[in-house]
Amino acid sequence: MATERFEAIVEDFEFLEDWEDRYRYVIDQGKALDPLPDALRVPATKVDGCASQVWLHPVIESGQFRFEGDSDAMIVRGLIAVLRALYNDIPVAEVGRVDAPAELARLGLNDHLSAQRSNGLRAMIERIRLVAAQAA
Image (cartoon, rainbow, N blue to C red; front, side):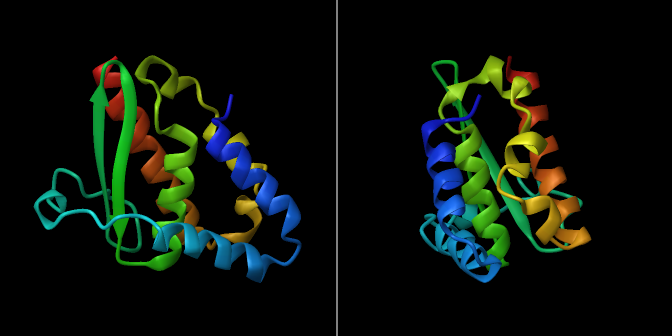
């Protein structure tokens, strides 16, 4: 149950055989994100459990879920972009049904992220699921 944008990332990853190229791709996805305004970099949007600074700002409009995010680490900004491709613009009621670990496993991220990055990624997913569940 992945979005077209996430499927495009999966296809791109299949094309890139070298993990250095895949990391560069993820970082490039993060570079393409608009920075989160300073007004949204507040304790309420900060994600605990991440080694780097991470902020996620969810927005629910007309029953659709989306979020903006930012980090002080380029690879984490890229992971935020990947999560946006997975979750943005789906019905808020469906957010909890997304099997993020399985979808991200299609990219092979589980085997190539440090333990700290993996924990941070799980923390971001938990925050997304919690906000969506509260809104649903």
